[in-house]
Image 1 (cartoon, rainbow, N blue to C red):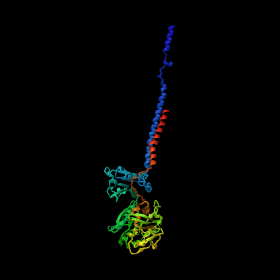
Image 2 (image 1 turned 180 degrees about the vertical axis):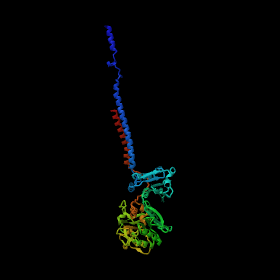
Image 3 (image 1 turned 90 degrees about the horizontal axis):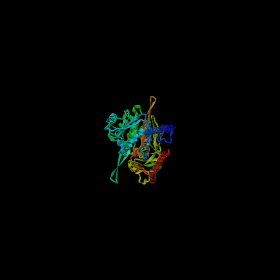
Image 4 (image 1 turned 90 degrees about the vertical axis):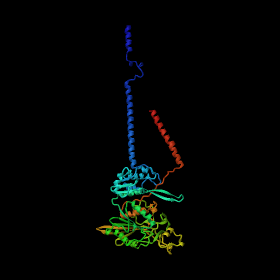
Length: 559
């Protein structure tokens, strides 16, 4: 029995270890218990990977969307005082309504502009045109050496020579080329304190670019015969050359196709031109010249031609020209118009010096319909009065466009101011402009009343039930488009003149854009603002980052 007992005890000792839980090794864990934890790790790992993938995809998507939005609606802020890097609303409105595709090709690499503080405005401005054109304007930069085929492609449409930095504006076979001077004007003025010259830079690129786009997209541009000479001699006085240049530039930058002509030697055929500009002839015209102008306006009975004539105080006796004007119902007075009420006049800076000029009003609003801001004044320095000889006759009607107030008075050109009346408001410059005789000027007895300073006469006829008309517009002073007056954003002179000419010739679009001085602009802040910025950058922002980091760390530790 004892042996059997021993064998039984021995068998009990050889039973599996699982029956003795106390003696089981601690690391001997059941295999099925490992699987739930592995699954949990896999689950969280997959979830983390998925979240990371979704986050990366979201970041990429946001970047793409933001890039597209930024390209169309840039979030850059122009902090310069003159808004150097913005384009005017007029330009934006024009390019937004384009229906044709326009290519702008810059004959230089973009870095050619961006590395210079003054020239980086060029690519910024070009980008504004592209962004606001609804996809109709493209801008590309080419190195002329590496891409000679670009200039070869457009050479057939351009007679000049391409230079590095030129900007080609093209729409089909219509091409306009802008050189550096059309984008940035450089002017040197003497500094007599240091006996050196001060160089200033003016950005005129927006006006040039908008003009070029208008020109190449206009299927029927208005063609202008701009009279500059008569027998190779300048037709106008030397003192008026800057005013004439301002008008020439104004028409060019508003999309007119201009040809300079010699009134004596060149033909001015109705088939070649829509408009003739005759700026302040210093001497009288010959009968042949007058006939040339009359034939142009008559157009063999077809009419539909126009002319813009400017008078001036420097003109002498002009009987042939006077007879031509009288036929159109216009007579120029031999006087200078001044304003007797100081509240209706102002001092105006011109190339001839500071002049007193009457503020004038629009007698006919239709010709100022394209003005963007009617609150700015129109001034008329050194203007001659225009008398309308009739309101209408058989086939002509006259209309006043610009007039003075009732308190304006006339200072005759053949008189000089009496020393006894030095208290009058007639400036010295007017005395120099007038020829001197023994006759004195008495302001109390001067002719007073409303004076016409810009007029238009229309000649009409009916052909096959259609009414055709030619028009003669007369402005009484070259100084109304003086360079400084035309460039000034304080006056409406340039914008009104281009608006009136556009209405006369039937041209719908006209934009006058102010030039921008390229000055370095510093953003100045007060000491208090500087202290606040310093605290924000050095203390507040780092503190926020630290707090966010601690919150994330604690949450992960307690998870």
